[in-house]
Image 1 (cartoon, rainbow, N blue to C red):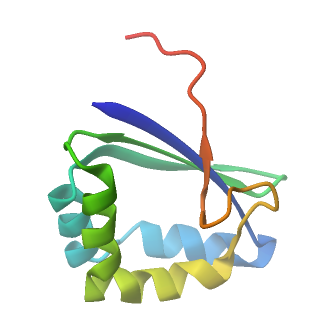
Image 2: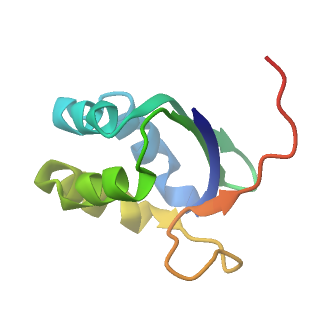
Length: 109
């Protein structure tokens, strides 16, 4: 299992809508997340900085292939077209990232 932390901004005007849609995520999107070996997925909001922190655990054996499978899914693509206009990627993110990946520096079970 590999733990992932990611960070992205969100427009202040979009917070209520972002919370609303994530309170009722489409079943096909949730199924694809699970099918792509992602478990224990959470998104946290930090105001007033308006940052979203995502955490998930990857339990598969080929992260790149599973992420490609997710990105090719029509329902997931449609979900992302709803979510992405609300998000504000960090300027410091690595090229090709939408959510900025974070380094885990401590963990305790």
